[in-house]
Length: 135
Image: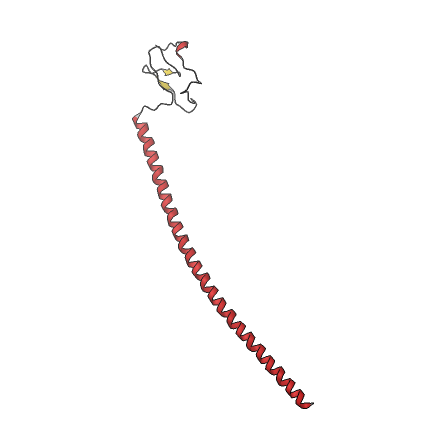
């Protein structure tokens, strides 16, 4: 039963040909390793076809686990984004307060500067009048 008909083989470049390097060998109903193609007994199966329900269940569990991990990671990142937005808002408020504070200090310094100029002008005028009285 393990004999092969060379006319029954499918072309490796056919429409459904797949890479065989990562696929475990496929066995026919007679427990013989089947090449890609058909056997004289009429058995045919694609090399990468999954027929074990347990394999499919494991794949589903792996996918579910990966989805859960990604959802958890997304939630963690959402929390970090929320904290960053809150920090940004707090920093913007602090910057606004500092801007107001600096503006007030600047105006106070300008007032002091103007007062100093006025005092200097008064002193100069007093010196001038004193000098004029002496002459």
